Amino acid sequence: MIPIAQPLLGEEEAEAAAAVVRSGWLSQGVQVAAFEAEFAALVGTPHACAVSNCTTALHLALLVAGVGAGDEVITVSHSFIATANVIRQCGATPVFVDVEPGTWTLDPERIAAAVTPRTKAILCVHQIGMPADLARILPLAQAHGLPLIEDAACAIGAEIRLDGAWTPLGGPVGDVACFSFHPRKVITTGEGGMLTTRRADWDAQFRLLRQHGMTVSDAVRHGSTQVIFEEYPVSGFNYRMTDMQAAIGRRQLQRLPEIIARRRSLAARYGELLAGTPGVRPPVEPDWARSNWQSYAVRLPDGADQARVMQAMLDRGVATRRGVMCAHLEAAYDGAEAPPLPQSETAHLRCLLLPLYAQMTEADQITVVEALREALAAEPLAPGALAEVA
Image (tube, rainbow, N blue to C red):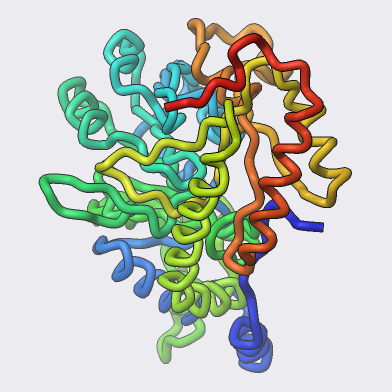
């Protein structure tokens, strides 16, 4: 079986976790602090705050941005449902706008029409590792006086060109970026998340809220030679990362350059192999973006049944996933108002995610493409669907 994804872990990560176990300090401590500092240096930001996962990171970002009951947040439906859920969990309403074809990221042309007096923030998504067009989104956010939150769950290692220079996502360009370390992501800590920001006041609030609103952390109190009593000025959450997770994350950061290089090489090879597959549209990487290729999404020819193609490939030993979900199509969002979202629905219903992970071989990729071609050969495609796509 060729899986859809596979984390790249080794003895270094196992030994890092074991060292934490032997140390006797397992919760948020020195390893988390070191992981935060190393992550901040990697993406070029003064502040990075580790949390339990990216969903909790997004929740804190929205809360600190001032999102609350009765507010609206402009975002995309075309994302994992956590993006919309965290808005609701703040008591606010997600206002869905469509995505651009090809990149499947938030369409800047749709933002202005979605702004209302209740709009509190813009939440863009760097979907499956492809950067959103921040050079066009940020000026719109600034013109309307709205904070810009980047859902960078999939995007560690991706880059964007701004003012002629390449910069890693997470600087951030907006007010805060949120990352995930789930096993499906490019690097992993099992679970875990990170918020990055240039705003010291926001970072201080993230750190307060992630540990129940407690003014003194366990690690600080434990290491003090003086008796310290903490205070709780606000009601917070238990959104902390463990030192075991952080120790693994530090080793994963060391692997990141080789992982990104390998993924980009595999993505380029997929492009070459798929060039001989009529009707299949590969993903689009604009000249201002460098994806980390967290996933490789292809659009199927018109008339191909997504589920049948996936089953045929699975029968050949190749795992796939459907295109990224759309929250507005789920029962949890029945009744939610949404404008027509044709590009989002096309990406969800007509796209397929192919296996991509650092350990893949060229033989694996050939097997994947051959399985896709065989599956499509059995499909009753629409007239003209097999015409070559320029």
